[in-house]
Image (cartoon, rainbow, N blue to C red):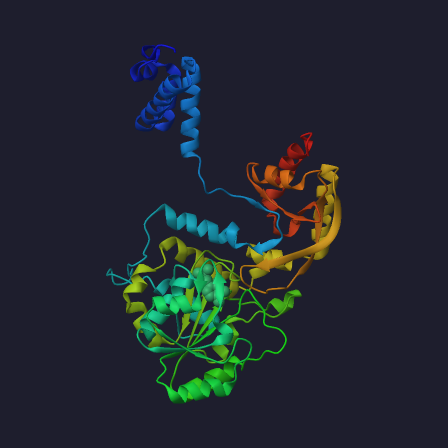
Length: 455
Ligand SMILES: *Cc1c(COP(=O)(O)O)cnc(C)c1O
């Protein structure tokens, strides 16, 4: 066994010019921590595995790689070639260039977040999105929180704690990521009153229960990520609103994806829009900021001022409030809608609206550049719990590696990681969801990965 006393001391290593360089880069405390760990590791290996004593420079290299590992971010940009536009696991909507700039500008300094520049007194955080939301949707007022799950929890807690909330069994949905309507209901201490059956609910189900029990709210949850087909029916939103209002009961619509634009204009099925919910007379409408709105993660509540007051005052509103970066991002995204420039500015709508011929020519140019694979017709999807079963025609670059799983893994491990999909033993890359500024790096990475012999 090598002599443990031969292990260099911390002080000795700290004198080494290379370690001093590391200290300049990473700071002394972290370097000392990495050195200590490395020295202890060496000691253990000598004692238990009879390992030879590494040289100083080997030790320093291992210290350096330890420091690099500690400081490399776990959250990193990826290239989404999966063809799923709103991929929840990939962070949903990429932001418009104006939205990104505004977030950076607001992040850099102080703001009038809660400061009234007119009076010099304390102002309200909620005003920043409020006017834009009313102007856009026709709702009386709006309120922004951290995400839509939070918005629903807040609405139920503020308006229906210990009270009855009417929900149809056709809508007792799980949205994914553990968000289930009955669980949120329990969490907000609201009492779930179910009507109808799994596949059908009738207007008289609503009417009968409204007549039978005191009801604080009628909650309608958009099906989002699944479809009921076959023997299925639900009354229209306007019918439910009409019967609820006859009993003076407000209707809350959890709209989920929150589309302002009509997806049917882009060759897709119709996804219910925010304007339709407001138009049907819903008292409150909740939706996500980062689904079909195409902005940052947020939960947006719009509707009647009388209902919003207790919501804004509820302690959960403080716990779930949106930060200045979220507000900067949401308001700038909303201005794209006001200026009628959505498909020119918001990345997810650019992707949805991308002409099939332009996708084909991108796929062709990839194939040409790589000199590998073939361009085949296929489909992209919207994702993000919207437009289930809807597919958009696209063109894909299909690669035929001998081991598709290994290629997929190599793609995921590239820097930046590339996310593709496998079908019939082929690895498919969809140009629709690859941002234009990522194309060059995608191709360079693909070339170097495909050059490896085993691929
Ligand atoms: C996505 C979704 C939610 C959750 O929204 P987050 O912004 O992800 O918290 C809630 N309800 C419906 C109907 C949804 O589609």
